[in-house]
Picture 1 (cartoon, rainbow, N blue to C red):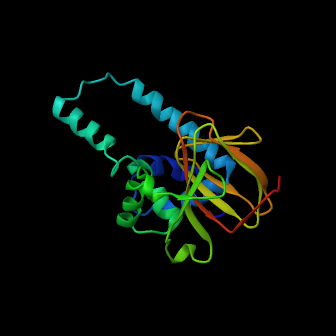
Picture 2 (spheres, helix red, strand yellow):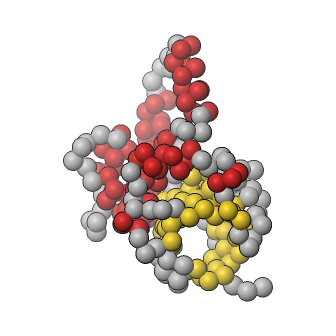
Length: 207
């Protein structure tokens, strides 16, 4: 999608419009700073609009249902389910099962870097030939400087990803790193950083 998608953002943000090419919009947002900035401004405007409405106290049963749903590992990542499924080209059911396992220690595989764990994802046909994985970096640690051998897209699922440049991505951000990019990143908050990654290989700098 080469044309800007600013006109589609209100419908996209509200989750309405069956004819809207949601995946196309998200792909464009990942590569277009102008439209991504417009989306953030629109989100801020919607937040202000919500604050202008007199609050109503939800009933006890609704509050209990919401708290139970948010606290459940099976639903904790529901707000990011569509983006994760699209990135990995997975059906929603399979994507949900994977996200529900992120809290399981046995789900993660050790790597040469003690603070960094990785689990490969059996992604859909749209991702075949690339490296699809879920990655976890312990809070307060960094992944070493490396070079991307091809384009990489990553979706932050939990915590924050701070680039060596100072740029920070938070949960829900979908980031594109082009082939040839050289960088390092860290998990600067008290929460582990968890990302979904589709890449074409990296070369870690020695030393």
